[in-house]
Image 1 (spheres, rainbow, N blue to C red):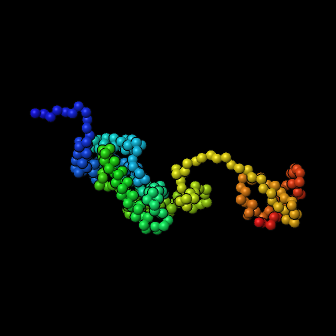
Image 2 (cartoon, rainbow, N blue to C red):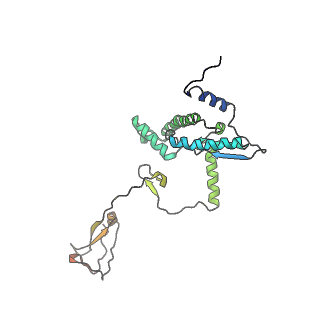
Image 3 (cartoon, one colour):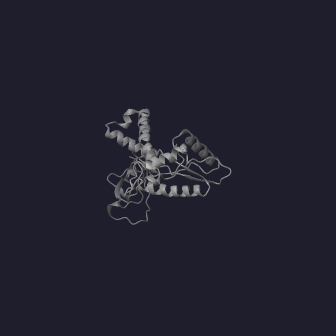
Length: 254
């Protein structure tokens, strides 16, 4: 007697079983095949700062549709999977995690901190891969990579050197974003810009040899007073009251 179909769809036991069959059967595996035209998608590697969200689900679903379509069209289709170390963002997460456990990052040393980082990667990197399994992602999992893998790091160094030799990478003086906590530069993508009201400071610059006399300067950078050695004014400028001077001499530099 045929088994009656359930009135509602229950994914438990069904999807996991089928996906494991696909994966073990090598249905998503790609290889060098001169008889087929290649088609490749490199999965934007999710950061191991946490777990996947709805944006990842949408993006990976679209990639999965494309790669399956090309695979059915006869292409040798490769969907290259992986995860990203996320550098500073992951460091911040691990530091917060340690703080919750009462551990001070600065007191345990670099090597001990790196151990916690690799433990974090194992937990959250593994969670992300399991989530991608749940989405049914038809990636070639035999090629799964992590951005800190030795081969990936060597490739980055090689490309960096080639770009430098071609003159595409150079050193220069630029205005950058600086994080006072991490003590490093950060990209625009890592900065949340916020407009704030500034201040206009009025400072009295003393005149050498003339006790009690000064020139009043308006500035947004009052801290420069300590490094200034002279102030120049135009004698033709209109100055009112007791602040009018012909030309102030250099201050004492204090």
